[in-house]
Image 1 (cartoon, rainbow, N blue to C red):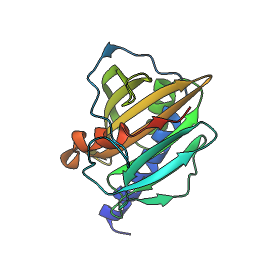
Image 2: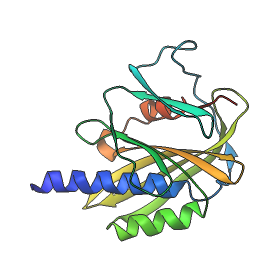
Image 3: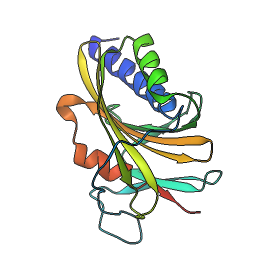
Image 4: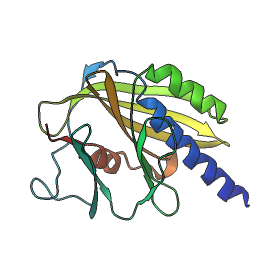
Length: 189
């Protein structure tokens, strides 16, 4: 396996694990942040991508994501959706779990060889419905010397946290596109 493919494989595994562990605890909101415009298939502003839809009936929510992303088997504890573009980047994941988000995320990244793990920001926000409170967290970290950015939108629902993450290599990260995908998180009840 070439070094590039090995790095991409490690990145994909790390992102999937981080997504699963990021939902391990209720998020603690910091300062309010602006919310991107609402997006949906049938109403609201047009998306910049052709959407595929993931629906979770147990927790009554759905998300939209680029149909170019291929779903993978959710293998991490709490993970309900993992998908990535064929090149493995960018990637998304949804996890539903309880626990301590920060401690578990750092432990998981470190165990995978992740270094320089930094929480850049954590902001209270609201989903596109204008009423569901959420927390948007940005982390930077490295694996194999490659800098990664992960954006995570977390919502507390009862004793669970639903965390929807979007990750990419730093040089290829388009935060506007990442937030466009993340803010499609919609609760139906």
